[in-house]
Amino acid sequence: MHLVLIGPPGSGKGTISSLIKDHWHIAHISTGDLLRAELKKASPLADELREIMGAGQLVSDEIVTKLLSERIVQEDCRNGFLLDGYPRNLAQADLLAGLLEENDLKLDRALYVTVPTETIVERLGDRRVCKDCGATYSISKLPPAVEGVCDKCQGEVIQRVDDQPDTIRDRMEVYASATEPVLKYYRDQNLLVEYDNSGDLSEAIQKLEAIL
Ligand code: AMP
Image 1 (cartoon, rainbow, N blue to C red):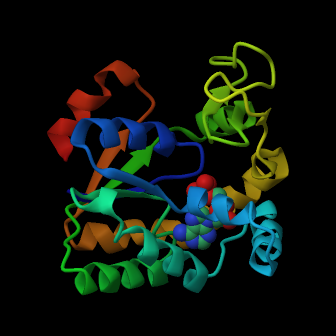
Image 2 (cartoon, rainbow, N blue to C red):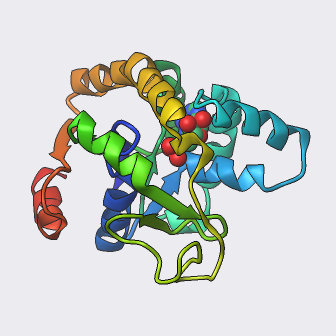
C-alpha cells in the first residue's frame, strides 16, 4: 500500500502514521524527519536547512525530493510506504507522480487528516520532542517521566524551534497557501479520503480500515 498523508501542522499526522505503519506493516517516511537527520550533519546544507526550517518556510523541492527518492527504494519500503509531510505543494505532487512512475508504483490513497484550528495551536505549543530519537511528548497530557529526559533513550527532550508561537503561525500560513491546493489535486484524481483526528484514538484503526 502506498499512501500520502496531508494535514496542517499539529493535526496528529505523526501519531496516525505510527498506527498505520504498525497495522499495515509499511514504512513511515516523514520528510521532516529526513531533513532533521540532515541538520545533525556538519555541512553547508545543514546550515541552510537550519535557517529555512527555523523560519517555518519550505525547503526547496529539489533537496526534499532527492532525499525522498533515496529513501523510497530502501528495503523496508518493499511492502509499501506512507509519506508524511510530502507533497507540500503542487510541484511536489507532480514530482511524486514522476518518482512513483519511475519505480513502477501507484498511489492508493491520499489521506487528509483534519482537526479544529484551536486544537492545533494547543497541541503544537504543548509538544516536546526527543532530540535524539524523535519520540514525541505533550507537556500537559503525556510528559516524560523525568522532566526534559526521554523515556525511551534518555536523550534531551526539547521544544522544536518551529513549535514557537510565531513560527506556528508562519507554518499555518505556508500550509494554507502551498499545501491546500494539493488536496484539490488528489480530490480531482479521486484519491482523497478524509480522516477526522479530533476523536478518540482507540477507534482510529477501525475508522482507518473503513476508508483506506
Ligand atoms: P514537519 O516535521 O513535517 O512539520 O516538517 C518540519 C519542517 O521541515 C517544515 O516546516 C519544512 O521547513 C521542512 N519540510 C518538511 N517536509 C517538507 C517538504 N515536503 N517540502 C519542503 N519542506 C519540508
